[in-house]
Image (spheres, helix red, strand yellow):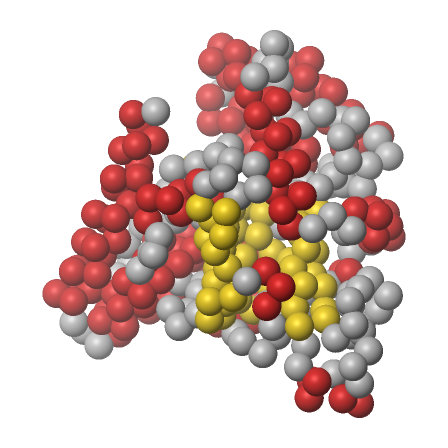
Length: 314
């Protein structure tokens, strides 16, 4: 969906099982623009299909996004200019790679399960999720030869992507620093803890913006934010989201990276001060400065309420 933001975790290749690692090795020659264009084209095809089917087509291969970081010479083994890590963790000399499988079939099934539970078999659910198409998607996950399988328990293996439509949960902004370095896709470096990449979407031509940080930093920030809110503003609805984020992030490899992709929302809010405003509100709460915290929160509300109003009007 165009106006959807995504929070993604990118892990080293060694974290994945053999089936997914083999698929990643085949899929990663695609550059980022090619993956984004393919993802957008597939979404359009689902939206305009003659038969309602919210699930991805089984014959299409799993998409994998890649973050490639330049590793400074001083941080390479023996100060060597050669590639870092295993044969795929550093496919380019002096770089390290991290991977995020799209897992769309699995995420679609999990969303269908939540919707079925929330609507309690209401006829609206069956209109939105045709039984036959869901059965085909589940069969693909259970018996197919693709790299993603349906776990017996959805909590058994977390998905690498969280999504939000026509807005971004405030809790997500606590995971990033407001002093990020502005980089291009080819300038990403392990040297900087927080980085921002802006550009143009290869398929839609829309402005794009992504925030990137180390997973360990995101975990520390989320824990501190959760502790601050629980002590000083336990009534703030962001607390539940924060505790959920902490649990989710703990499921991944500590060397992983986290990315917030604004998607089509970037055109409405960028340059975006939400990370700064959330940090200001949390710091004010810690210092017992309620008025400053309220002002920062009001800035957030004003910025994002206009985006949500666009969603309701569309």
